[in-house]
Length: 624
Image (cartoon, rainbow, N blue to C red; front, side, top):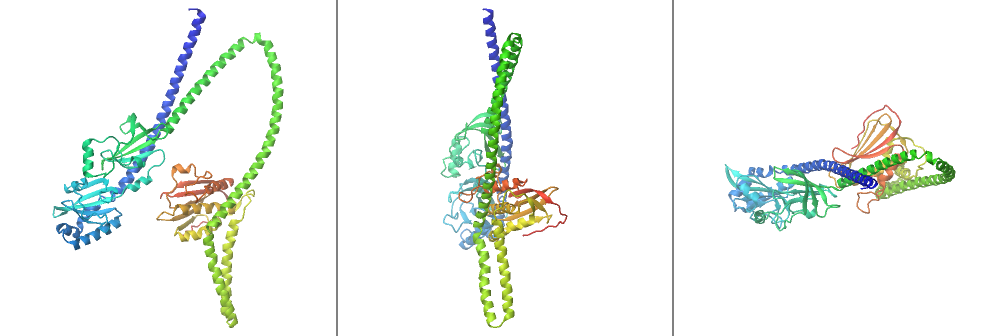
């Protein structure tokens, strides 16, 4: 083989080996990034599983004791001893009905030793359990054998699923019957994860009894054995549901409780992280599926980064070799360098002219940008004013009521004063006129506050020292009618009554009105309605907190909460601009608007503004 050909072959072989080593390194980097992302998903999934398990146990543990307490009622014992006494059955039915209402269970009923239901809390309903034979139910059979039973199944009468508790009823050590209780646990599904991640609760046979994916409910983790399927059909645990397997297959096993699976219908590649948590007390298990899309994206990013890094290193090596080659040719290329130098001077001149033109263009663009900023500031001011008008429109009914009462009183008092003057009863007429003056002052206070709130502010004016207490009082005045109508308990806590913030008072009121309105909207479905406002300060900052007792703001929504046109309200009830405008107003004052979760689970918005002055008079004021 000629020497030149041998040298060329050696170079190509070296290049191929380096390329293979680089690809192997990039693949290893991608695998490492994917494993790290999967580990983070496992930690998050384990926390969610623990949370779901705790919520389920908290719900069921409240009812564990209830069936055993029914044997303490003498009427229940008497009914099981004399099952033909209809009057006694009515007494027990009424007793079970009141117990069911107090415990908020679904149904409570009494079964004799033959499996016939003797009394039930739903005895008034068309689908009452009274007279049903439930001896075939496993929880009834277990209770008759002396073991307190627990069982999830679909009701044979009501067709509604639930968890059944059963406990034997004894007198002097002899079993007379069984007390049973049904609880609906379907409401837990509403609080489970939404989006690409999925979760289900499976029983001892691997049947999904609860799931965040409606199609998975009453599906199976694996095909059921014929004996198991026959037992389920005999006990009618799931009534007419077909119990088809859930479509997923295992791709890679991580450990005993986690694996990578391919799920039919899942987004992206369909690969998900499967984690399981066993509930040994009830022989159930939670199964959590985490979307591996982010992990796969991390792996791809790491692979591409490794490839680009190696390509850059190769380019640097080639560049160094080229520089060395140019150094060896320097003496022979002197004339070429001279010509290159002349050409470079020409390019510099051209570049200088180009830079001068670019400078002129940048000056023009700067002027355009200033005009755009001015238009943007004007548009923001118009949006703020539009938001104010929207708030005033929402409060129009309440304001009409507030003004209608004094107007009616004014007319009546004026007529009375005229009659009193005609009759010569001047002291009484004078008292009427004094009352009229007070009513006029009240109307002036209402219209003055509305006029002050509706006033269009100039965003270009410098910030001033604004008393925070006055701003809160003015904002509360505008939503006071709604607070009273919706029976909301309002509480305000201030450690520094005379604290001042550096901002614009009218725009601060707009932010507070928006936060108050959002808090009232969030608490419409809450049993406890508490609106709390706190004012705190540090050496140079003022913190105004607005907290509610609503459902709070989920973590996945917080990242988009202050984006324009993002809203969680139903269509037609909000444009999603209120918080975006409020956040920009606070930021223009050099402040910060953020949200956090209260210990009770509600939302707390915090307005952080620069402190305008320092006062030492401290007290605490509560309004509730």
